[in-house]
Image 1 (cartoon, helix red, strand yellow):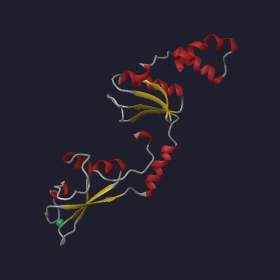
Image 2 (spheres, protein in one colour; image 1 turned 180 degrees about the vertical axis):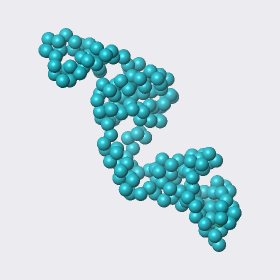
Image 3 (spheres, rainbow, N blue to C red; image 1 turned 30 degrees about the vertical axis):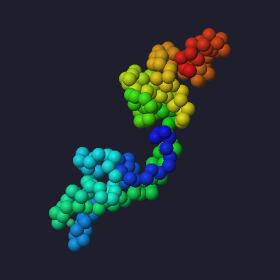
Image 4 (cartoon, rainbow, N blue to C red; image 1 turned 90 degrees about the horizontal axis):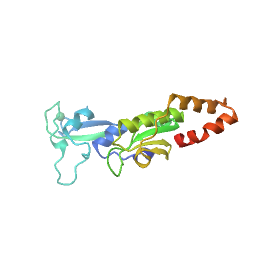
Length: 198
Ligand SMILES: [Zn+2]
């Protein structure tokens, strides 16, 4: 799945350049010029599909054929990708390692639900669950999951819309967590909590 991918992705399309935060340069094909300019990837995406490959195939018309050099006005450039700095990749990696315990993910509207976007994260299960309830209601036509890593705690398509917890429920949860309830109190409310929290 896209979200769990840890392998470095190959840089083949404009989308790959944007997703990886890499830099793209256009070099003039005129041998007497070779002017080099950084490409505004966002702007390029307005003119060219995100899936467009960076290099043309044999006998293939390519968007770089019509890109004009701003220096000599020659039509046609080569593309050069400068991969994001190592330092930046390490920072991104450590950010991933320090991610929250629980994540709320949006898998989109239609089967097979392969587009995954993390829309919420929290270290506390009940805070995460609150965000999951909100997301499931707000995007009721999407598949929303509450996950701890790859483990799916809640799935709005599989389990239906989650039950909303009241302030009283949360107070009870907190009391259990901090151990301020007596055993009798715990036994009395036990079934309610397991039904709601599972
Ligand atoms: Zn030029």
